[in-house]
Structure formats: structure tokens, C-alpha cells
Amino acid sequence: MAKEITPRSEDYSQWYLDIVRKARMADNSPVRGCMVIRPHGFAIWEKMRDALDAMFKETGHVNAYFPLFIPKSFLSKEAAHVEGFAKECAVVTHYRLKNDPEGNGVIVDPEAKLEEELIVRPTSETIIWHTYKDWIQSYRDLPILINQWANVVRWEMRTRPFLRTTEFLWQEGHTAHAGAEEAMEETRRILDIYATFAEEFMAMPVIKGIKTPNERFAGADETFCIEALMQDGKALQAGTSHFLGQNFAKAFEVLFLNKDNQQEHVWATSWGVSTRLVGGLIMTHSDDDGLVLPPKLAPIQVVIVPIPKPAPALTEVAEKIAAQLRAKGISVKIDNDEQNRPGFKFAEYEMIGVPVRLGLGQRDLDAGQVEVARRDTKEKNSVPLDGVAEYVANLLDEIQANLFNRAKAHRDEHITKVDTWAELEDVLESKTGFAYAHWDGTTETELEIKERTKATIRCIPLDWEEEPGTCILTGKPSARRVLFARAY
Image (cartoon, rainbow, N blue to C red; front, side):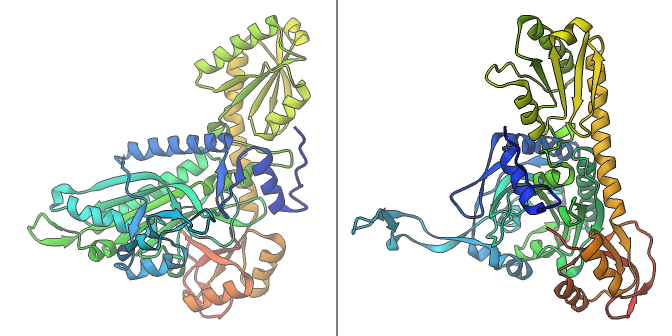
């Protein structure tokens, strides 16, 4: 496999696109802004999905599925929500095609116009809360803790595979509660799940925070987020958890009889992560030789390559090693393909990010050892055959930790405390990363900073020390610093 990857230092954007294509993650589709997720890319998403699904279920959530199509009138019921999504909605107006009388294929049948247009799901709050109205009558029906795995459509003008596409895959949780405190606890619980998943599975360090009112989810009272930093110094919003208050319950008249026998509107949350995480994974760890994957999310954790080609004795030992590794829950592939030389295979597995490669030749066999190569550092070691499974299992844990520590060191080096406008500009233009600066708390100032620098307030960090000061733009009093960055 020819590498031909554009170096990150030359063109980071093209480097990313090269990785997506050459590591067989995704292809462009005939529909602008959509992608074909290839098996290797989808296998990574499946690993993410399975890990998150287990974490949701451990905390009492169950899966369901709601319709792809939403009546247009539903979006009109919550004013902030419709305003937030109106420009991104795909609209179905007709339900039938017919042959063109002039012989030019098919055309939309003008007589098949829908009485009410349907919106292709951009998010599901409206149709789910319409449904919850029938499900909820009493406090005994609460809480409802539902998640769904689905696809959504948001009509994007500028797209990039995984990071921003017109159609993408995600999970969206929608919960209903009898009180505000319980709903807020749920919102924070999910935020913690997302942060744990990002750091323990993706090896991607994140900052937990609150969005400003301007950056808040449309229809939410509060939006919590996890923010990560990519290798090029741009931020990535990796997940959000929203405290919706009673906004959607009021819009859809979802009331319940509380313990005091009084009618009350239900309290709500919603939360989600998407295939954007795959893009974040690529940009956090990969290098100029291809994809780098943390072992916990690698579809193939170990590949065994007989050298120079498969032979009965080599295959027998490879099978034995593979059985030992699989007994430890490690996914293994033995590459017995005789069409390609070992060098080609090494480059291919490096490209697609297999964390550990075992090279097994006759000389290794005679010496009672096997060559072990790790993808993250490119180091190679000769390891005795006796005990190689234990060595590899420990090595996978070491790689997982190394990737996290390496990414965290990069992130921490790119959080800069700034006190002046000049310092903010210098960080954004030269050093890149997060600028930790004072802001006067107004949307007007936030928008002016964005217009002048293309940087947004990524979050108000949770549990960081509050430090009063003055806004870097207006000089007005500021209660605490926030994180500014340019972002994907």
C-alpha cells in the first residue's frame, strides 16, 4: 500500500482527508456532504457504540427508536428550538414520483404533495416529547430514561468526513423527570459518562464545562460539554448534555400528577455524541504514517505476520499465540495472505492503526522468540515466545496509557492564560490552542471577539478556580476566566 500522506506540517486539513481515505475509513458519496463509512471506519464506530451503550445501560437507560420524519408543526412549538435548527432542516414535500411524459426519467408527482411537510430528523426532542405526553400521567411513570441510536440530517454548507457531514450517526438520550434537581443530576451524570469514555476509551483528554447562553443548545436552559484539543491546536466539541428545564414539556403540554396530587410540567434532559468522535480520534493520535488507534477501540488489536511467507511451522505457532491472546479478550488477525510481501503488510497495518504487530520468521522460531512492534512509538522488541501473550496484553495497556498521556501533555502545553488582547491574538495566531481569558459575560462581547478572531468561547470550565479580573476586550469586570479557541 502506497502511503503518500500529506505531512501534517504542510497541510493539516489534507493530511486528515488522506488518513480518512488511505486508512479506508470513509469515502465520499454521490450526495454532497454525505459519506460512505467503510467497514474499518464503521468497526471503530461499533466499538465506540458498544462501550457507550454498556455505560448507559449500567446507569438505568434503555434503548428505543423514534421516527425519522417529524411533522413541521412540531418544530414550531418550541420557539428557540425551531430558530436554532430552521436553517439546517431537510424538508419532505411530496410522497411520490412518476415517469416524465417527455421521457426524461422520473419527476415529482405534483398531485402527491403532502398536506403537511415532514422534517428529516435533525434531532428528536419534538417528536419524543409529543410521544411522552401519552406515556406520562403520574409521578409513578417517571423517570423515563431512553436513548436511541440513529442517523440525523443537518444541511451543512461546509462538510468534512466524520467531523461535519449532512447525515451522520449518533446516539441521543431523552429523559423525563419529576423534579429539576433530578434532571440536573442526570445531565451531569451523562457529562461524566462522556468524559470517562473519551479519556478511558479514546485516550482523548477533555475539559468539562458549561456553554455560554449564545452557544447553548436551542431550547435548553443549560448546556454542558466536553471539549478536546486536536494536534493542530483547534478545539473539538466532543459531546454535549443539556438540561432542558420544562421547555419541551410546556411546548407539548406534558404534565404529571405529583406526590402532592398537583399537576406539574415534567423536567427534561437530552444528550448526544456522534460519529464526529471518529474524526476526533483520528486528529488526536494519528501521524504522518497513518492512523493511530488506542487499543480499546481498535477493531484489530494485534496482527501476526509470518515472515517471509506462511509455512506450516510458522502458522502453527501463530495460531497458538493467537489462541492465547484471544483467551485474554484480545482481537487478533493472522495474515496468511501469500499475495503480498511482509513489507507491504507492515505498511498496511501501520496505515490502518493496528496497535501491535508480531513478526514471526523461521529465525525467530529457532531462537524461541517473536518480534513485537508497537504502532504508537514504532519501537520493536524481540520477546520470548513463552510469555508473549502476557507481554502483549501489558503492552496494549501501556499503549493506551501512552496515547492518553501524550495527548494530555500536548493539550496542557496549549492552555495559555492571557490577560490582554494582544496576548489573545498571539495565542490564536502563533501558539494555537486554548486561551484562558477573562470575558465580561455579555453576548455582545462574545460575538465581537468571534468576529475579530474567529475564536469562540468553547466553555466555562467546571471545577476550575474562579479568579476575578477584567475582560480582555472591554475592560469591564469579569468573575472568572473562560476558554477561547478556534474550533472544528
